[in-house]
Length: 398
Image (tube, rainbow, N blue to C red; front, side):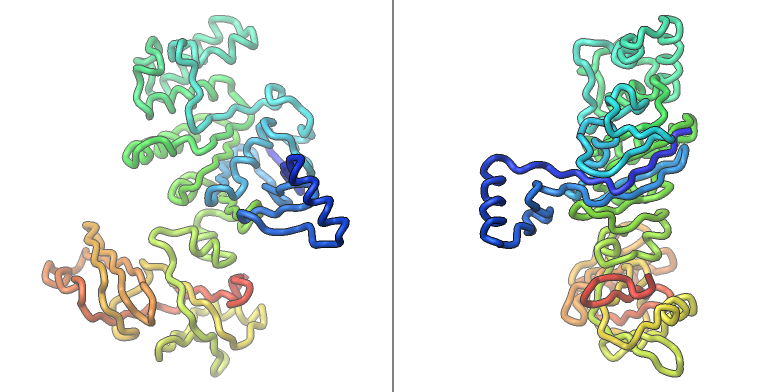
């Protein structure tokens, strides 16, 4: 069983000598020694890169850690791997506390962003290397390497050296080297970020197939929310060392916990409006620009359960949920034809509003009419509205 539990895990990088002296001086003077710098918390102990990280991972689950650069996701992965020391908290693989267990004894395998292949070895020898170190019998090594090569469709490259391979082929070799060890947990640190867009799409599909063929737990780090949405059973969204939300891809898309998650998940990014949440005849509605939209029954129930009062809010609406019909007025600034849809950037209510309009049932003339300078009207249904507290940024339905 490869379950994993992280309890209040923290990573604090100690100050260098000068920083420590400054912190001590501030403490003596009675000055506040906690501050914000480059979005990470600075304390007397040092820079806090990961804050109170709590997560229960099920056996064979595919977990994706996602967030912008510097949010602590790779640091968390390296603590799980044993490449970074855990400053505070506990890490369990199965029922075993592994805080002080050496990386080689954790039964994990890691795939790095830069492949980390031995350039002087063939593909076969790169994949076999870890098994040779374990003194695994030759016939077992041969069987494991050839089986992994078949799964990853790299059998024809076993005799080549890494320099003779493309980026995608090298990444497959790096993954193959990890899976031959049959680890309890597979860690992947932005493995596709060095590939071009087409190859990334192909490799994403390969990882999904791989996951279906090998019985192991995956923890995958990326800053690409498309990868997170397509690969993960659950997504852990991070910012400034803190977990913002944990949920299935559909949960975080449909019910973002706060404004950060709402803006980070989804392409194009969610539109945000200044609006007012009102209640009339027992029904919640949002008002903006002279338009009133009554919220759906499930949103009514959630807001009523939280006893939400009338207030100024930030209203979030995804671009694909906006429809061209009588409502708010706007002028098209940019029109991007994407084939089956057209992406419009519309100047409305003093801001740039992005909408994705399907062209499937439109004539060429109707599509052409959505050009730069066109005057349009648009609206959105109540079940697609997300209302956030203006001060805290938290979803009022949460």
